[in-house]
Image (cartoon, rainbow, N blue to C red):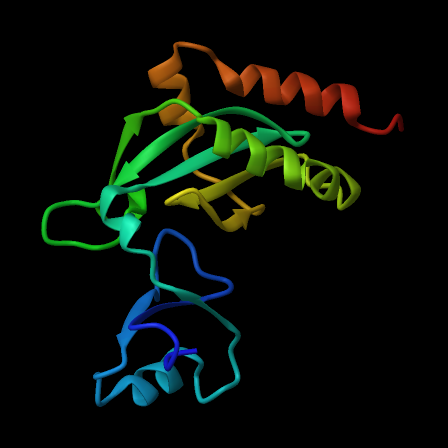
Length: 166
């Protein structure tokens, strides 16, 4: 993959908040050592993606409930840093979802519902779906702040409605 792209993003599958993400380039002489370290000598899974230059403009975190987008935030990296993650120094900004964002949401809706993914956050960079965060998607507090809508209560009500009777 490194032969096809000038730069790659490599991240641990169980990471969060930007922890463990590295960038490697074709001319990095130590890239294999860095990947070996990240994979703990090939005993730990990682995701490798083509680096998208559009990441320098930020990424959208779009929150979905039952496959439907409730809104999104634009995450932008701090000066001198590359990661847009809020836990890695990035900042949140209000943003609108565009037609492409809505197409992405529509394309994954059925799969999310079939897999039982009720609440998730997806990351979109340059109009491309980068990942689906299902364990603890961040951005709900910021989305609520920017939109003035208390999405927390909507999510809880939907959970209560969807929960099987005991």
